[in-house]
Length: 302
Length: 266
Image 1 (cartoon, rainbow over the protein chains, first blue to last red):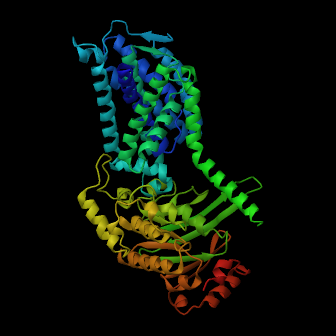
Image 2 (cartoon, each protein chain N blue to C red; image 1 turned 60 degrees about the vertical axis):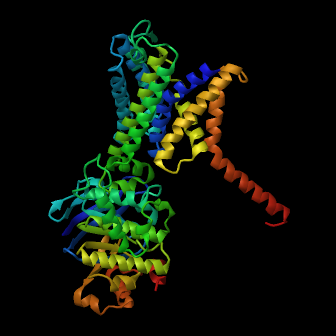
């Protein structure tokens, strides 16, 4: 059980970067960015391929740059070409499937058998007890979170936050919302690709379908975190996604270990949880309206 | 300062919804002049302000501001020198961000606040607090609160401050007090007069209050069917009453003014 907890924490920190990306695109920019699934695989593909070629460290910025490019394509489609934002993400995502295939050398999966990863490099000849993996993953997630926090406090960060709040006001501040959306989506997808890059090197393998459903899992983490911690401030929001991601992975580990729910059902459970959480305000107001109708009927009113 | 030459705009051309919103409209405003615009519903008042601010590009004609042709400049570039307030107090501010952050965004229009990765400095905060104090609403003590918590009047006053934080060459006011209660409206209006006078801002104000149009500023413009049908200023305007205005409107257009809000407001 301790080993499972440790693994869950490692994965929690690694996937927290996706949740952080969704915090930026979905919460702050108010855009449902469906580039995420393909972008996650892109990050993993670039990272694993470069690690296989002997550049496990360089692989990380390269993966992030690739992710940012994917974000730029989605942003271009929706800000300059008038493609609805959800469709723009789906289009990029579809195209990325081929790009990912290419990045993996026209194979559906790549494994790192003996090549070094950033984890093995850092461990050197030390014991393979998983602590290095945990420390490095936590370090990357916390560093990324801190940088995101600092970035959102800059003038550019402020204009990105205002874009999700009130685009008219961004224009009135002499800033082009197309520009802020582009920067925001590039940053978000760089984070998603970073997550893929770290996960890929950790698991020493990448599969073309690695990213399926990542966006929903990321949203689940976001929502779990916000439910636990609230989201009043940016700092709280960023900590919340990390906490949410860890909780999600702990639940996942617990379920896989005890098999209370068959593991293959987890995606369905995740989807239901996310749908319910996002629908909650509507369900709540609907319920209170029905209740009011009932009480009004009982009093003989109308 | 502002020169509009023969601009026209037709929305949805060639469809059943075709609407000529501006028709060969020309206007020239001098530096520091405040002109009120009145007119019936659909006369093109807001459309004219939108054309100046760049919400859409005009079909023909040209718009020049302070000697620079802005006819084809995008709206976010024009907003560097044009401040704007809408009737809806919610449109000018970002609700989930703090007062201070909103002001910092407005300050992006200045030459100093440009560097994208710089942060709000202590000096900026002091400047914001000092400006907020002028509103007399106690907002300077609430700078780290989200704007969404403020009342409509407070938000509109804040928007006014944001629009004029970096003195614009032109201020566009689109019935900016119409959604406020009478007391607050008066206060916002008084703030507007003061700021506009202090900074010598050229200003176009759409209003539905004829008395206000006659009292404030230097000039009254009346619009109908996408053009300016009446333009009074100076001596002629000085002795004018609301009834005179209505009579002149009828004489100019051959129609009664059909804006209930104008006719019913005192």
